[in-house]
Amino acid sequence: MRLSRFLVWSALAGAVVPIALEVLWWVTNRSQALSLEARIALEKVTLVLWPTSFGMFAATSDRTLAISLLVLTTVGNVVLYSAIGVALWYGVARRKVYLIVPIAALSTIWWWLLSMP
Image (cartoon, helix red, strand yellow):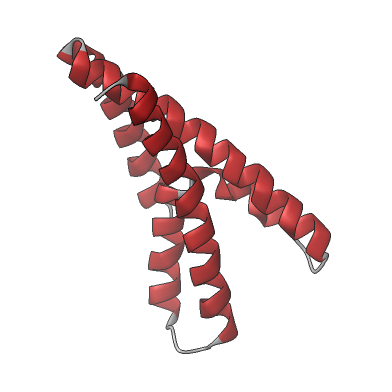
């Protein structure tokens, strides 16, 4: 697979994940069916798959601000997923030693996010 094609797929994943998670959170917040433990698990999944979602913490009842933050954090996620995609492509297509950097970075970030109380 060529780099440009891999980059497009990575960027697309970076855009679809935040939108899907935002819809899931919207549905979750409308119903009280989920327990606190399930909400915490969903929050951890959100932080792992959408690390730029930290920017959504500033969203208030102002709908314009919330939409702006969603767009900004989605763009940030697209950039992050694209960078990881390029690093993975170079590791798979060129030299396997290049895989060390994205694997170490992702493992460290995920360990930090998942070990949060």
